[in-house]
Image 1 (cartoon, helix red, strand yellow):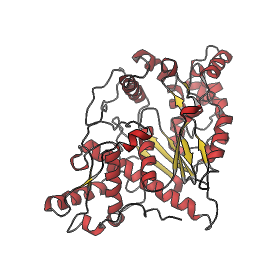
Image 2 (cartoon, rainbow, N blue to C red):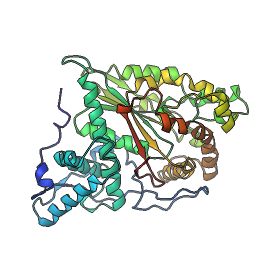
Image 3 (tube, rainbow, N blue to C red):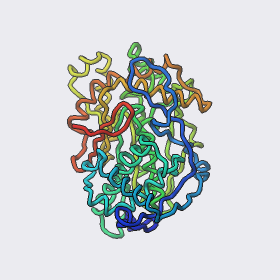
Image 4 (cartoon, rainbow, N blue to C red):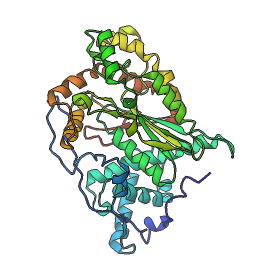
Length: 418
Protein backbone atom coordinates (compact mmCIF):
# COMPACT_ATOMS: atom_id res chain seq x y z
CA UNK A 1 0.00 0.00 0.00
CA UNK A 2 1.29 3.42 -0.87
CA UNK A 3 2.10 5.41 2.31
CA UNK A 4 -0.25 8.30 3.00
CA UNK A 5 2.50 10.89 2.86
CA UNK A 6 4.53 9.50 -0.01
CA UNK A 7 3.17 11.66 -2.83
CA UNK A 8 4.38 15.21 -2.00
CA UNK A 9 7.95 16.17 -2.87
CA UNK A 10 10.28 16.03 0.15
CA UNK A 11 10.74 19.30 2.02
CA UNK A 12 12.68 20.22 5.15
CA UNK A 13 10.30 20.20 8.10
CA UNK A 14 12.84 21.28 10.65
CA UNK A 15 13.87 24.15 8.41
CA UNK A 16 10.29 25.37 8.21
CA UNK A 17 10.19 26.22 11.90
CA UNK A 18 13.84 26.96 12.58
CA UNK A 19 16.77 28.25 10.55
CA UNK A 20 15.80 27.90 6.89
CA UNK A 21 12.44 27.74 5.17
CA UNK A 22 11.28 25.11 2.66
CA UNK A 23 10.36 26.30 -0.81
CA UNK A 24 6.80 27.56 -1.15
CA UNK A 25 4.90 27.23 -4.39
CA UNK A 26 3.59 30.46 -5.84
CA UNK A 27 0.37 30.25 -7.84
CA UNK A 28 -1.10 32.71 -10.27
CA UNK A 29 -2.59 35.59 -8.35
CA UNK A 30 -6.34 35.64 -8.49
CA UNK A 31 -9.10 36.96 -6.26
CA UNK A 32 -12.23 34.80 -6.61
CA UNK A 33 -15.73 36.11 -6.24
CA UNK A 34 -16.97 35.54 -2.75
CA UNK A 35 -19.61 36.85 -0.42
CA UNK A 36 -19.14 37.96 3.15
CA UNK A 37 -22.32 38.84 4.90
CA UNK A 38 -23.44 38.45 8.45
CA UNK A 39 -26.66 36.58 9.04
CA UNK A 40 -29.80 38.53 8.46
CA UNK A 41 -33.44 37.69 8.22
CA UNK A 42 -33.62 40.08 5.26
CA UNK A 43 -32.42 38.15 2.24
CA UNK A 44 -30.35 40.46 0.07
CA UNK A 45 -27.48 39.83 -2.29
CA UNK A 46 -24.11 40.20 -0.65
CA UNK A 47 -21.44 42.42 -2.13
CA UNK A 48 -18.44 40.42 -3.39
CA UNK A 49 -15.50 40.73 -1.02
CA UNK A 50 -12.02 39.24 -0.87
CA UNK A 51 -12.56 38.68 2.86
CA UNK A 52 -15.14 36.11 2.29
CA UNK A 53 -15.85 32.49 1.69
CA UNK A 54 -13.87 30.76 -1.05
CA UNK A 55 -16.01 29.72 -3.99
CA UNK A 56 -15.42 26.57 -6.04
CA UNK A 57 -13.71 27.29 -9.35
CA UNK A 58 -14.92 25.53 -12.48
CA UNK A 59 -15.14 21.78 -11.66
CA UNK A 60 -14.50 20.61 -15.21
CA UNK A 61 -11.37 18.56 -16.02
CA UNK A 62 -10.32 21.15 -18.58
CA UNK A 63 -10.44 23.87 -15.98
CA UNK A 64 -8.38 21.72 -13.62
CA UNK A 65 -5.69 21.34 -16.27
CA UNK A 66 -5.59 25.09 -16.86
CA UNK A 67 -4.33 25.97 -13.39
CA UNK A 68 -1.24 28.10 -13.60
CA UNK A 69 2.01 26.15 -13.11
CA UNK A 70 3.69 26.67 -9.78
CA UNK A 71 6.85 28.78 -9.53
CA UNK A 72 9.44 28.34 -6.82
CA UNK A 73 9.91 31.22 -4.42
CA UNK A 74 13.31 32.04 -2.87
CA UNK A 75 13.84 29.57 -0.05
CA UNK A 76 16.46 31.14 2.15
CA UNK A 77 15.64 34.82 2.64
CA UNK A 78 15.29 35.88 6.31
CA UNK A 79 11.89 37.39 5.54
CA UNK A 80 10.60 34.07 4.19
CA UNK A 81 12.01 32.15 7.16
CA UNK A 82 10.16 34.53 9.45
CA UNK A 83 6.99 34.16 7.37
CA UNK A 84 7.09 30.37 7.69
CA UNK A 85 7.65 30.60 11.43
CA UNK A 86 4.69 32.98 11.71
CA UNK A 87 2.60 30.59 9.63
CA UNK A 88 3.55 27.73 11.95
CA UNK A 89 2.27 29.74 14.91
CA UNK A 90 -0.91 30.47 12.95
CA UNK A 91 -1.41 26.77 12.24
CA UNK A 92 -1.01 25.96 15.93
CA UNK A 93 -3.64 28.54 16.88
CA UNK A 94 -6.39 26.93 14.80
CA UNK A 95 -9.61 25.86 16.54
CA UNK A 96 -9.47 22.34 15.04
CA UNK A 97 -5.95 21.41 16.14
CA UNK A 98 -7.04 19.61 19.32
CA UNK A 99 -10.05 18.03 17.64
CA UNK A 100 -7.97 16.35 14.94
CA UNK A 101 -5.52 15.01 17.53
CA UNK A 102 -2.63 17.34 16.73
CA UNK A 103 -0.22 19.16 19.04
CA UNK A 104 2.38 21.84 18.37
CA UNK A 105 4.97 19.09 18.21
CA UNK A 106 3.02 17.04 15.70
CA UNK A 107 2.43 20.10 13.52
CA UNK A 108 6.18 20.82 13.59
CA UNK A 109 6.90 17.22 12.59
CA UNK A 110 4.44 17.41 9.71
CA UNK A 111 5.05 21.03 8.71
CA UNK A 112 6.13 19.97 5.22
CA UNK A 113 2.76 18.32 4.70
CA UNK A 114 0.90 21.43 5.87
CA UNK A 115 2.92 23.68 3.57
CA UNK A 116 2.54 21.35 0.61
CA UNK A 117 -1.22 21.13 1.16
CA UNK A 118 -1.36 24.92 1.50
CA UNK A 119 0.38 25.30 -1.85
CA UNK A 120 -2.00 22.87 -3.50
CA UNK A 121 -5.15 24.49 -2.10
CA UNK A 122 -3.88 27.95 -3.05
CA UNK A 123 -3.36 26.73 -6.60
CA UNK A 124 -6.80 25.14 -6.64
CA UNK A 125 -8.49 28.42 -5.73
CA UNK A 126 -6.02 30.47 -7.79
CA UNK A 127 -4.67 32.36 -4.80
CA UNK A 128 -1.18 33.75 -4.23
CA UNK A 129 -0.12 31.76 -1.19
CA UNK A 130 2.41 34.42 -0.15
CA UNK A 131 -0.23 37.14 -0.13
CA UNK A 132 -3.27 35.53 1.43
CA UNK A 133 -5.79 37.71 3.23
CA UNK A 134 -6.46 36.80 6.85
CA UNK A 135 -9.76 35.19 5.84
CA UNK A 136 -8.12 33.15 3.09
CA UNK A 137 -5.32 32.03 5.39
CA UNK A 138 -7.85 30.94 8.02
CA UNK A 139 -9.91 29.14 5.41
CA UNK A 140 -6.90 27.12 4.28
CA UNK A 141 -4.84 26.54 7.45
CA UNK A 142 -7.60 26.50 10.06
CA UNK A 143 -10.18 24.61 8.01
CA UNK A 144 -9.35 22.73 4.82
CA UNK A 145 -5.91 21.38 5.76
CA UNK A 146 -6.76 20.23 9.32
CA UNK A 147 -9.87 18.47 8.00
CA UNK A 148 -7.88 16.83 5.21
CA UNK A 149 -5.22 15.57 7.64
CA UNK A 150 -7.98 14.15 9.85
CA UNK A 151 -9.47 12.43 6.81
CA UNK A 152 -6.07 10.97 5.92
CA UNK A 153 -5.80 9.52 9.43
CA UNK A 154 -9.28 8.04 9.07
CA UNK A 155 -8.33 6.44 5.76
CA UNK A 156 -5.14 5.03 7.30
CA UNK A 157 -7.10 3.57 10.21
CA UNK A 158 -9.68 2.07 7.85
CA UNK A 159 -7.05 0.44 5.65
CA UNK A 160 -5.05 -0.88 8.61
CA UNK A 161 -7.92 -3.25 9.39
CA UNK A 162 -7.19 -5.28 6.26
CA UNK A 163 -4.35 -7.62 5.37
CA UNK A 164 -1.92 -7.08 2.53
CA UNK A 165 -3.44 -8.38 -0.67
CA UNK A 166 -7.03 -7.87 0.49
CA UNK A 167 -9.47 -5.99 -1.70
CA UNK A 168 -10.06 -2.92 0.47
CA UNK A 169 -13.33 -1.05 -0.01
CA UNK A 170 -13.10 2.73 0.02
CA UNK A 171 -13.77 4.58 3.25
CA UNK A 172 -17.03 6.53 3.00
CA UNK A 173 -16.76 9.86 4.85
CA UNK A 174 -20.05 11.65 5.46
CA UNK A 175 -20.13 15.45 5.59
CA UNK A 176 -23.31 16.70 7.25
CA UNK A 177 -23.88 20.45 7.14
CA UNK A 178 -26.70 22.90 6.45
CA UNK A 179 -27.15 24.41 3.02
CA UNK A 180 -24.66 27.11 2.17
CA UNK A 181 -22.36 26.38 5.10
CA UNK A 182 -19.47 25.43 2.85
CA UNK A 183 -19.67 21.64 2.67
CA UNK A 184 -19.54 21.46 -1.13
CA UNK A 185 -16.45 23.68 -1.31
CA UNK A 186 -14.84 21.70 1.52
CA UNK A 187 -15.51 18.42 -0.30
CA UNK A 188 -14.15 19.96 -3.51
CA UNK A 189 -10.88 20.83 -1.72
CA UNK A 190 -10.64 17.45 0.04
CA UNK A 191 -11.22 15.56 -3.20
CA UNK A 192 -8.51 17.61 -4.92
CA UNK A 193 -6.01 17.01 -2.12
CA UNK A 194 -6.64 13.28 -2.15
CA UNK A 195 -6.15 13.15 -5.91
CA UNK A 196 -2.93 15.16 -5.99
CA UNK A 197 -1.71 12.92 -3.16
CA UNK A 198 -2.11 9.94 -5.49
CA UNK A 199 -5.30 8.49 -3.99
CA UNK A 200 -8.42 7.86 -6.07
CA UNK A 201 -11.48 9.48 -4.55
CA UNK A 202 -15.12 10.01 -5.46
CA UNK A 203 -17.65 12.63 -4.41
CA UNK A 204 -21.38 12.33 -3.94
CA UNK A 205 -24.11 14.59 -2.63
CA UNK A 206 -27.51 13.61 -1.35
CA UNK A 207 -28.72 15.99 -4.07
CA UNK A 208 -27.56 13.43 -6.61
CA UNK A 209 -30.25 11.09 -5.31
CA UNK A 210 -33.20 13.46 -5.48
CA UNK A 211 -36.19 12.17 -7.38
CA UNK A 212 -36.39 13.25 -10.98
CA UNK A 213 -38.55 16.30 -11.68
CA UNK A 214 -41.34 14.03 -12.91
CA UNK A 215 -41.17 11.80 -9.82
CA UNK A 216 -41.14 14.85 -7.57
CA UNK A 217 -44.33 15.98 -9.27
CA UNK A 218 -45.96 12.66 -8.35
CA UNK A 219 -44.79 13.02 -4.74
CA UNK A 220 -46.36 16.48 -4.64
CA UNK A 221 -49.67 15.04 -5.88
CA UNK A 222 -49.53 12.27 -3.26
CA UNK A 223 -49.18 14.80 -0.43
CA UNK A 224 -51.32 17.76 -1.46
CA UNK A 225 -51.00 20.73 0.86
CA UNK A 226 -47.76 19.56 2.47
CA UNK A 227 -45.27 22.29 1.56
CA UNK A 228 -42.36 20.23 2.93
CA UNK A 229 -42.82 17.65 0.17
CA UNK A 230 -43.91 19.97 -2.61
CA UNK A 231 -40.36 20.38 -3.89
CA UNK A 232 -37.04 18.58 -3.46
CA UNK A 233 -35.34 18.56 -0.07
CA UNK A 234 -36.93 16.71 2.81
CA UNK A 235 -36.99 13.00 3.58
CA UNK A 236 -39.22 11.37 1.01
CA UNK A 237 -37.90 13.33 -1.97
CA UNK A 238 -34.96 10.98 -2.62
CA UNK A 239 -34.68 7.79 -4.63
CA UNK A 240 -33.39 5.53 -1.87
CA UNK A 241 -33.07 2.41 -3.99
CA UNK A 242 -30.96 4.38 -6.46
CA UNK A 243 -28.86 5.55 -3.49
CA UNK A 244 -28.21 2.00 -2.31
CA UNK A 245 -27.32 0.76 -5.78
CA UNK A 246 -24.89 3.63 -6.33
CA UNK A 247 -23.15 3.34 -2.96
CA UNK A 248 -22.91 -0.45 -3.17
CA UNK A 249 -21.31 -0.15 -6.60
CA UNK A 250 -18.86 2.52 -5.42
CA UNK A 251 -17.54 0.49 -2.51
CA UNK A 252 -16.83 -2.37 -4.92
CA UNK A 253 -14.36 -0.26 -6.93
CA UNK A 254 -11.37 -2.03 -5.38
CA UNK A 255 -9.35 -2.97 -8.46
CA UNK A 256 -7.46 -1.09 -11.11
CA UNK A 257 -9.39 -0.89 -14.36
CA UNK A 258 -12.81 -0.87 -12.70
CA UNK A 259 -14.93 2.15 -13.63
CA UNK A 260 -18.40 3.55 -13.04
CA UNK A 261 -20.27 6.76 -13.60
CA UNK A 262 -21.67 8.55 -10.57
CA UNK A 263 -24.91 10.52 -10.77
CA UNK A 264 -25.26 14.28 -10.62
CA UNK A 265 -28.18 16.64 -10.05
CA UNK A 266 -28.79 19.77 -12.12
CA UNK A 267 -29.98 22.43 -9.69
CA UNK A 268 -30.47 24.95 -12.46
CA UNK A 269 -33.08 22.88 -14.32
CA UNK A 270 -36.70 24.00 -14.33
CA UNK A 271 -35.94 27.53 -13.17
CA UNK A 272 -33.84 26.38 -10.22
CA UNK A 273 -36.22 23.67 -9.03
CA UNK A 274 -33.83 21.07 -10.38
CA UNK A 275 -33.77 17.67 -12.07
CA UNK A 276 -31.39 14.73 -12.28
CA UNK A 277 -28.66 15.49 -14.79
CA UNK A 278 -28.47 13.55 -18.05
CA UNK A 279 -26.34 10.40 -17.50
CA UNK A 280 -24.09 11.43 -20.39
CA UNK A 281 -22.80 14.26 -18.17
CA UNK A 282 -22.06 12.12 -15.11
CA UNK A 283 -18.37 11.94 -14.12
CA UNK A 284 -16.53 8.64 -14.23
CA UNK A 285 -14.74 7.18 -11.22
CA UNK A 286 -11.91 4.69 -11.54
CA UNK A 287 -10.74 2.00 -9.15
CA UNK A 288 -9.12 1.32 -6.86
CA UNK A 289 -11.03 4.04 -5.01
CA UNK A 290 -9.76 4.71 -1.49
CA UNK A 291 -12.24 7.29 -0.24
CA UNK A 292 -15.78 8.43 -1.03
CA UNK A 293 -16.78 11.90 0.18
CA UNK A 294 -20.56 11.95 0.66
CA UNK A 295 -22.13 15.28 1.62
CA UNK A 296 -25.60 16.49 2.42
CA UNK A 297 -27.68 18.84 4.53
CA UNK A 298 -29.63 16.08 6.32
CA UNK A 299 -27.08 13.27 6.49
CA UNK A 300 -27.21 11.60 9.88
CA UNK A 301 -30.65 12.89 10.89
CA UNK A 302 -32.46 10.49 13.21
CA UNK A 303 -36.23 9.93 13.37
CA UNK A 304 -37.72 11.46 16.52
CA UNK A 305 -40.94 10.87 18.47
CA UNK A 306 -43.88 12.30 16.55
CA UNK A 307 -44.82 14.66 19.35
CA UNK A 308 -41.37 16.26 19.11
CA UNK A 309 -41.46 16.93 15.36
CA UNK A 310 -45.12 17.91 15.15
CA UNK A 311 -44.53 20.50 17.86
CA UNK A 312 -42.14 22.15 15.38
CA UNK A 313 -44.42 21.71 12.35
CA UNK A 314 -47.33 19.25 11.95
CA UNK A 315 -46.23 18.65 8.34
CA UNK A 316 -43.08 16.96 9.65
CA UNK A 317 -45.02 13.88 10.71
CA UNK A 318 -44.83 12.25 7.27
CA UNK A 319 -41.24 13.48 6.77
CA UNK A 320 -40.26 11.92 10.10
CA UNK A 321 -41.86 8.63 9.06
CA UNK A 322 -39.94 8.71 5.77
CA UNK A 323 -36.69 9.35 7.62
CA UNK A 324 -36.78 5.88 9.14
CA UNK A 325 -35.61 4.32 5.86
CA UNK A 326 -32.61 6.62 5.42
CA UNK A 327 -30.19 4.83 7.76
CA UNK A 328 -30.15 1.72 5.56
CA UNK A 329 -29.97 3.79 2.37
CA UNK A 330 -27.23 6.23 3.41
CA UNK A 331 -25.88 6.24 6.94
CA UNK A 332 -24.92 2.58 7.21
CA UNK A 333 -22.33 3.08 4.45
CA UNK A 334 -20.59 5.91 6.34
CA UNK A 335 -17.76 4.98 8.71
CA UNK A 336 -16.35 8.44 9.43
CA UNK A 337 -18.32 11.65 9.90
CA UNK A 338 -17.70 15.37 9.62
CA UNK A 339 -20.44 17.56 11.09
CA UNK A 340 -20.39 21.30 10.43
CA UNK A 341 -22.26 22.93 13.29
CA UNK A 342 -24.02 26.29 13.03
CA UNK A 343 -25.51 28.48 15.73
CA UNK A 344 -28.55 29.78 13.89
CA UNK A 345 -30.40 27.91 11.11
CA UNK A 346 -31.79 31.17 9.71
CA UNK A 347 -28.30 31.91 8.31
CA UNK A 348 -29.20 29.41 5.59
CA UNK A 349 -31.38 32.08 3.95
CA UNK A 350 -28.44 34.37 3.28
CA UNK A 351 -26.03 31.59 2.35
CA UNK A 352 -28.47 30.01 -0.10
CA UNK A 353 -29.15 33.35 -1.72
CA UNK A 354 -25.43 33.90 -2.28
CA UNK A 355 -25.24 30.54 -4.06
CA UNK A 356 -28.18 31.42 -6.31
CA UNK A 357 -26.73 34.85 -7.09
CA UNK A 358 -23.46 33.18 -8.09
CA UNK A 359 -25.36 30.69 -10.26
CA UNK A 360 -27.20 33.49 -12.04
CA UNK A 361 -23.93 35.40 -12.48
CA UNK A 362 -22.54 32.34 -14.27
CA UNK A 363 -25.41 32.49 -16.72
CA UNK A 364 -27.31 29.57 -15.24
CA UNK A 365 -30.98 29.64 -14.36
CA UNK A 366 -31.45 30.21 -10.66
CA UNK A 367 -34.16 31.08 -8.20
CA UNK A 368 -35.19 34.67 -7.56
CA UNK A 369 -34.72 36.17 -4.09
CA UNK A 370 -38.37 35.50 -3.26
CA UNK A 371 -38.10 31.91 -4.49
CA UNK A 372 -35.02 31.40 -2.31
CA UNK A 373 -36.96 32.56 0.75
CA UNK A 374 -39.79 30.18 -0.11
CA UNK A 375 -37.39 27.32 -0.90
CA UNK A 376 -35.37 27.57 2.32
CA UNK A 377 -38.50 27.95 4.44
CA UNK A 378 -39.34 24.38 3.49
CA UNK A 379 -36.10 23.15 5.10
CA UNK A 380 -36.21 25.18 8.31
CA UNK A 381 -38.68 22.93 10.18
CA UNK A 382 -36.31 19.97 9.70
CA UNK A 383 -33.33 22.03 10.86
CA UNK A 384 -35.15 23.11 14.02
CA UNK A 385 -36.40 19.58 14.69
CA UNK A 386 -33.32 17.46 13.94
CA UNK A 387 -30.20 19.59 14.38
CA UNK A 388 -30.31 19.63 18.22
CA UNK A 389 -30.19 15.81 18.33
CA UNK A 390 -27.54 15.66 15.61
CA UNK A 391 -25.31 18.04 17.56
CA UNK A 392 -25.94 16.35 20.91
CA UNK A 393 -25.74 12.68 19.93
CA UNK A 394 -23.89 12.71 16.60
CA UNK A 395 -25.11 11.30 13.29
CA UNK A 396 -27.08 8.10 13.10
CA UNK A 397 -24.61 5.24 13.67
CA UNK A 398 -21.54 7.42 14.27
CA UNK A 399 -18.70 6.59 16.66
CA UNK A 400 -16.80 9.14 18.73
CA UNK A 401 -13.35 8.26 17.36
CA UNK A 402 -14.63 8.68 13.83
CA UNK A 403 -16.53 11.94 14.27
CA UNK A 404 -15.20 15.46 13.70
CA UNK A 405 -17.48 18.33 14.74
CA UNK A 406 -16.63 21.76 13.31
CA UNK A 407 -18.30 24.84 14.76
CA UNK A 408 -18.52 27.75 12.29
CA UNK A 409 -19.58 31.38 12.57
CA UNK A 410 -21.80 33.46 10.30
CA UNK A 411 -18.92 33.91 7.85
CA UNK A 412 -18.49 30.12 7.73
CA UNK A 413 -15.12 30.21 9.48
CA UNK A 414 -14.27 27.54 12.09
CA UNK A 415 -14.43 28.72 15.68
CA UNK A 416 -13.82 27.18 19.08
CA UNK A 417 -16.95 25.32 20.11
CA UNK A 418 -18.35 23.86 23.27
